[in-house]
Amino acid sequence: MKLLVVEDEKRLAVSLKRGLEADGFAVDVALDGTDGKAMATENTYDAIVLDIMLPGINGFKLCGDLRDAGDWTPILMLTAKDGELDETEALDTGADDFLRKPFSHLVLVARIRALLRRGKAERAVQLSAGGLRVNPSQRRAWRDDDEIELTAREFAVLEYLISNVGTVRSKAEILDHVWDYAFDGDPNIVEVYVRHLRKKIDIPYGTESIQTVRGAGYRLVGTTS
Image 1: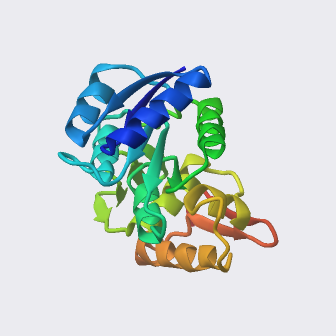
Image 2 (image 1 turned 135 degrees about the vertical axis):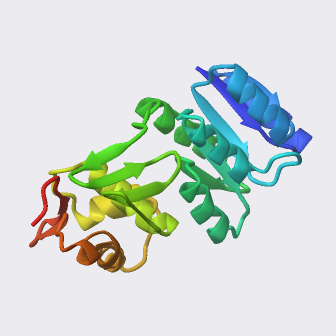
């Protein structure tokens, strides 16, 4: 498995390369975001370990650029020790997972292997259900010809539901896919965001595309009433 490590702290980058190679990975290293983008664009990697604070192009921008270009290589983003906001933005810009510094090498390898098991989840250019359309790479949504302004989290909930159109998804599943595995807040946050979405994509158009399935969760349907 071939990895790209984008980390500007040279000592850490060298340490990561040696440790990951000892675990059987082939590892390329870029010490700034500009080189990291060039290497990710010109080569094929099974996963990318990406720091946020980089010279040239920061990790958020690099991750977003790759996703906008249709590159869905799994990305593990390295965040600051107390980087709750960093973690949120990392996931919102398209990262698949994050790891706080300082971290254990064993945990890093376990996270990378988990991403590799998932593989590249190539996402469709556009998802649709009835008159509702979503462009994941551009993070844009439309109801018929009207573009709908959504926050990053609202969009993530909608993208997950429309990716599973016709299927009931529980609150726990939505939390797991839209927030992160370590979320320990009130699961009713899902209800809040579903309510926000309905006010934007359904109520103004007299539709009911997001249905509540009592005791089970939510389902987005292709035909509305």
